[in-house]
Image (cartoon, rainbow, N blue to C red; front, side, top):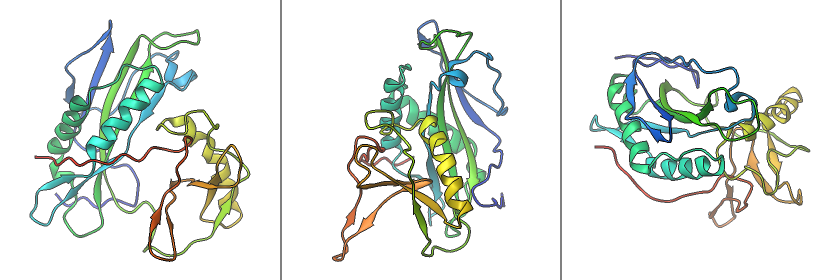
Length: 249
């Protein structure tokens, strides 16, 4: 199927995965064709930010098969995020199987090899239910949605100007090391200020001393030394880098 994504924008795929947590256990989860959710207006995800998510991609290989990139690392980080947000973790095997099911069900939406397009995969969990007080929700939704996408940034790769932000995206011992919406919400205003001044994005310094580079607003930061070594920040306030491999079959 010839689907032409417009940059990094949402294109509805035929199927997504959803699973519900209630009475202390997860159900078996299903594939469905509706990408809408109906939740209580008092859900903790809406009022207290009890949610987390991941982002990964599926690629079409030269031989026509589909390849997932580091899905087990995303599963491990998702589990850590759930535990930090007091949500019932999804077992790593269940996370991987849910991702595989959605990708295979939407295989026609995985772009062809060699055109710099991919199938973006967004697993997420939210706390739901009638929850007025500040406490962990008794019910949760785990879902995986996908969309064919092009490049996040418009045009070919090129040097850009960045603005060092006076704002912090996360507290020194807060939630910066897990993938939760609050970290990204905190970066929206500094990003806007940077773009209004003609910069491509902003650079966040470490929140404790404001002397070390940590992250770019919409991406991770990687430094390259004079001898060609790649260096990434080591900090408790940015996402952890996990290393392992897993291939879809």
